[in-house]
Image (tube, rainbow, N blue to C red; front, top):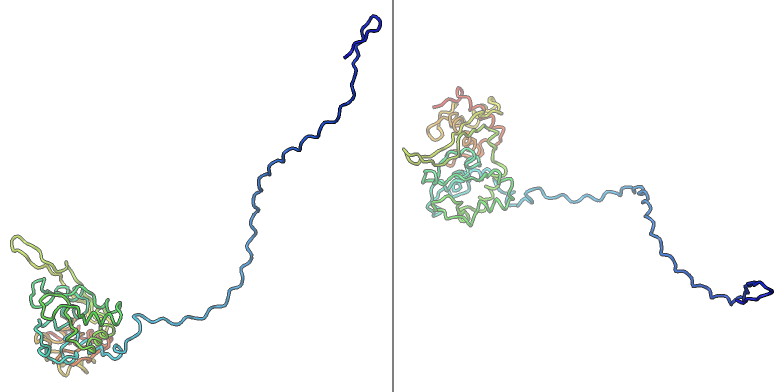
Length: 327
């Protein structure tokens, strides 16, 4: 700045210089960061279902339980099997007819399947619930089995039943305990298959012939200070014998099949020598049907009456003590 003085006053003047050169351009600013991604749009609707495809070919039929039937089972005789269940060494059961032929010393009941399993196959849950054995005061016969053979017969296969009867791993025949004997040396294969067929096809359901009521506790020993150990046993009672049968038809069956030996009133050739036929049926309905169907070795041939309906009719007739009285 310069000051010029003209005259007596001072005039201050600003003097502007020439423009300077242009400044350099500024640098570009930094780009901003990307914004957040937007939310996904809603899914589109499902397309229409396609048409059902054609059915595939049917598979082959499966085998009915318990599987293929062995040829030995087909050839077996269930009635002979029932006779063997009563007495396996009898000729009607497929044996020789004499225990001595088997060179064994054995209690008589070890020669009878029914001794442990009962005529009805229910063991100690049925008609033999009150029968004694080696553990309940009887030294001459084994205990009644806890197994239900009727259930086993419909749940085991053919071969399993065969092996259960044959039992090569069982005890010796002259053993004094209640374990299942080894029958592999005494029964032929044919006898065993007969027994299998009997159990699967020929056993009669006891409920079809009578009602059984078991009252009281299972058999066991108890202690009394005054008398010591004593045996407690349930009470068995039978009712509704032949309830679903026709007594008229049953009487006709009796006349045709039984009367020739037992007489018109059932008093001849009394079973066991102590009871008339009617009396026997009324007292032991669990056993009578078995003898009628499968015989009594040495006294009555097997197969006299085999149909359950005929047995029902026969029982209905025998239930009448006026027609078939006691001795």
